[in-house]
Image 1: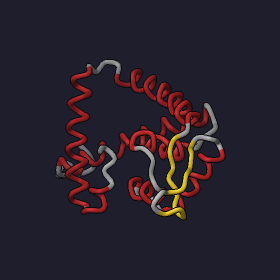
Image 2: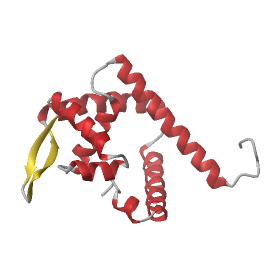
Image 3: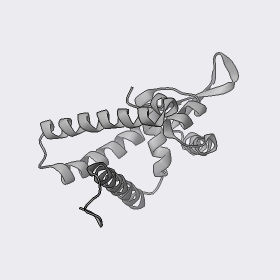
Image 4: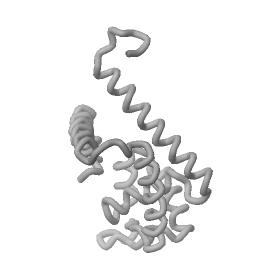
Amino acid sequence: MGFDDTDDVRVELMRELKTASQLQHAWIMQAWQDQPGLHPAAAMLLSDLAKNGEARPSELAKRRFVDLSVVSRQITQLSAAGLVDRRPAPEDGRASLVSVSEKGREELGRWRANYLEFMEKALGGWDDERVTDLIGRLAEMNADLRRALGSAAYLADTTK
């Protein structure tokens, strides 16, 4: 296993998940270097908006587990690139709601095509049943991890 064979299997699971996250990050950075433009962190926020719909910046920060200032910078970058639309929140004109623009959907489509190509190259030998099984197990684990972290993390569930 690792440097200490007495490690609990749960520790090994977390190591493998960390490695998977690092590999995904490496692909994202490689793709960004090949085709510079939108910073990958901003692209992930754009993807979150596309999946979950229009949101206040504060809601996005909670969901992404980052400070509001980080989300504000990303929204500024996305807005300058024409990838998001902003409008005043109906219940409070001082707050804004952010959504993906048509141009943003096109940019996400490009990223998605590249990502699917990468995943097909990496997991081409996996059938849909095997992938679906892994998705289910990871989703269940993530829900349990959110519950263990407490209500704030549970509320930040982006799978809903």
